[in-house]
Amino acid sequence: MAELPIVLVVEDDPEIQAIVEDALEEGGYETAIAASAEEAVTLLKGNVSKYRALVTDINLKGTMDGWQVAKQARLIDPAFPVVYTTGAAADLWPSHGVPNSILLEKPFAPAQLVTAVSQLLNAGTASPSISP
Image (cartoon, rainbow, N blue to C red; front, side, top):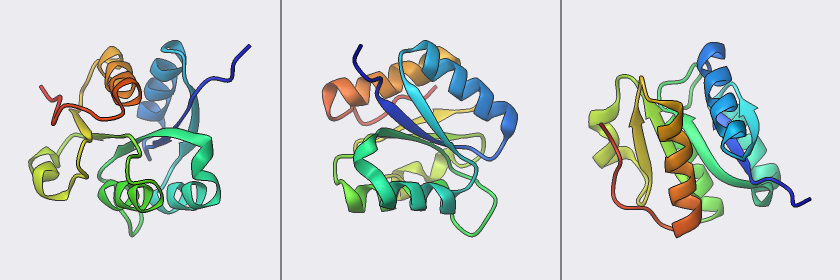
């Protein structure tokens, strides 16, 4: 059996972590969870080739945010697929988001997340946005 694509999920809320993890696993992906931006960057730098996409909350506990995680991922791989999730920072996406990323505003349906990740992985690039 082929290995499932691994999606790195950066989310500091355990309840949302569980929802995202369940949605992605039901959608045919394996997940790796990081509870902070710092942890996610460490994982990316250690083995970015292992991960196929990044799903990151924007507002995270700690000194870094999701914008910075995505920028670090793109330094390692300029085409790395990025899906942002946020409840309060959507208005900053045009100026802070990396190109060819997707933003989902919370609350989002789990199927929206799976569709966003699939779109980025299948196309290699995404349309400029998917947001409610």
